[in-house]
Image (cartoon, rainbow, N blue to C red; front, side, top):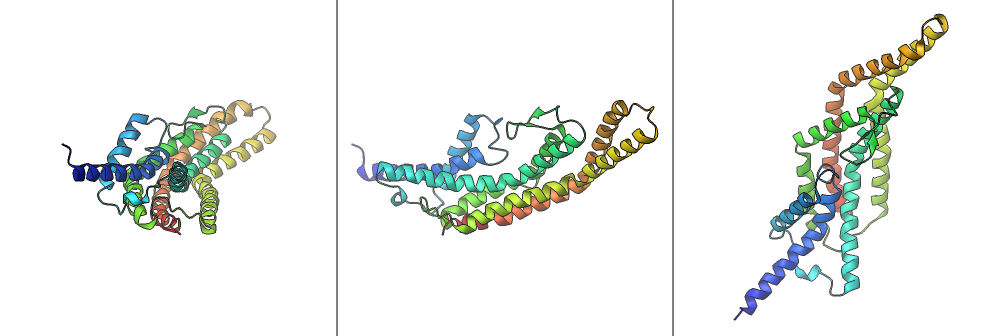
Length: 263
C-alpha cells in the first residue's frame, strides 16, 4: 500500500514547484537574451523547470498560496505573469536603447533600407543597431548580468508573496522614468557617430554648392557610410563603460522595483 503521509508530502512539494514555475516561466520567456526568439522553446522550458526545481526547496512558498477555485487560480496566474512582465519590460529598456541609437545612426548613414532581422527581438533593425546589440549582449553576459535576474527572482518570493501583486503609482512612474531614460541614453550612445555623419552631410552640402561638377550624390553616400562606420568603431571605447554603467544601474533598480510590487 502507498504510504499516505509520503503521498501528501510528494503532492505538496509538487504543488510548490508548480507555484514557483508559474512565476519563473514568464520571466524566462520574456527576459533579455534567454527570452530571445532564436532560443528554442524547448530550451526555455528546460531552464524554467530546472530553475523551479532548484528554487522550490529554498523559497518561502507553501501550498496555502495556491487558490482553491478556478477563477482564483486564473487570477493567480495573471498576477504572476504581470509581475514577471513588469520586470522583463523594465530590463529590456537597456537593450531598446541600443536598438534605437543604432537605428538613428543607420538612417543618417543612408542604410535605412538595408535592415536585417534582429535575433534578439525578431524585428528589422539597421546594421549598426545589430552590431551594437550584439556587443551589448556580450557585455551583459560577461559581467554576469543574467545572474541579476535569477537573484532578483529568488528574492522576489520573499518580497512579493505568490498571488499578492500590488501595482502602485510608483510602479507606473518607475516604468515611465525608465522609458524616458531610454531616449536620453540613446542620444548619448549615438552622439559620436551621429555628430560625425552630420558634419559629413554639411561638408557634402558645401562642396555641392562650391564645386557643382562633383557628382555629390555618388560620392556622398559611400563617404557617409565610411565615416559612420569609422566613428561607430571608435565609439566602442566609449560605448563599453556606458553600457556597463547601465547594467549596474539595472542591478540596483530591478530589486527595488520588485520590492515595490509587494505593496
